Length: 222
Ligand SMILES: Nc1ncnc2c1ncn2[C@@H]1O[C@H](COP(=O)(O)OP(=O)(O)OP(=O)(O)O)[C@@H](O)[C@H]1O
Ligand SMILES: [Mg+2]
Image (cartoon, rainbow, N blue to C red):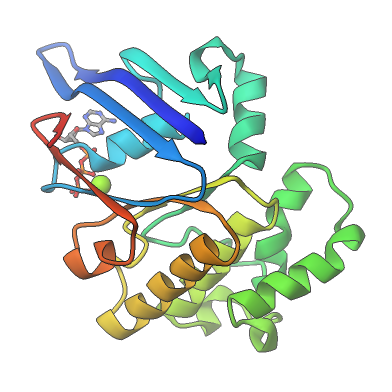
């Protein structure tokens, strides 16, 4: 089943002086449960594609269709609801809240959704175990290694049980051994938990964990 579809996506960035065309007609179908790597040179538009596919940014033209629904037809409220509940995001620099401990960071999306945290006790515990941070649940981000911080970010992306996880260079800031732990965790989420994953990476080894590699060159999929 196709969960996410890009149809003839174009993305321009314009200034007063000029327009840069970054995406030049991207077509893509992502199947449910697929783990996809997006590769390409620096500046080729990988992050741009990820942001457009996840509704964080709008295409200049073309469509993004999620579960059969054209994202452009949704109002801001509906779109942000989808982003908060159907999509999970992981970035290179973790983006944790420094004043919240591990558990609190993971529960942040529940708060944003106005959900009762008490009902999620078991779920939080379970996710902490999946990412291997149960013993560190009361620690603060500054007390954690980079790999541990990234696992908190992954746990936070999982708490609302998203359908698709978007990851922009999730191992980009980690040494190879720690990066491998994160990749194994993503692989586990894909295979055991049936999550669809779209991961941007410039690392061939990281990409080897995925089911399919998409290469972007000159604004198109090669
Ligand atoms: N918000 C923006 N405004 C203007 N130009 C932008 C914006 N975001 C990206 N660009 C430009 O679009 C092009 C593609 O950027 P993008 O960040 O998608 O590349 P990338 O493939 O992710 O690169 P990297 O591997 O370095 O992260 C670049 O030339 C960049 O300068
Ligand atoms: Mg990028």
